[in-house]
Length: 118
Image 1: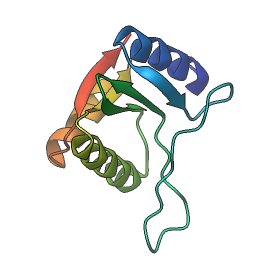
Image 2: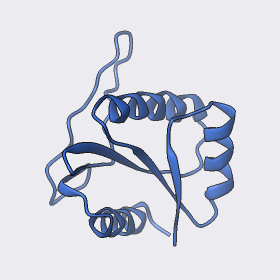
Image 3: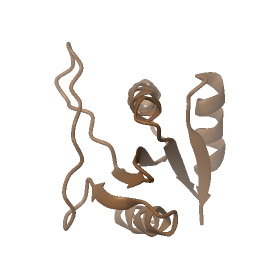
């Protein structure tokens, strides 16, 4: 399944969860605010952000990657930002990626909720 299809399902999930003022790192949506860490060239841009009862939530499409450290770094930052803003970090794991996502969350003690994306 393509990345775009995963994104479309993630957007539907975010809307069904009741998120408002949704921003997404995909065409036809306003891009979420990006974060830049000192010493890194590439900014960190959340896949999807949205508000729910005033709390800012971050939603990431969680797929397997060879660069696990980069994902962990991004997810730690987004989990921290969500906590600071009273929200949550949701990692939406498509079919075939849930075990990878569960393992990364467990091993690195990430502050995230893993959701199976059907």
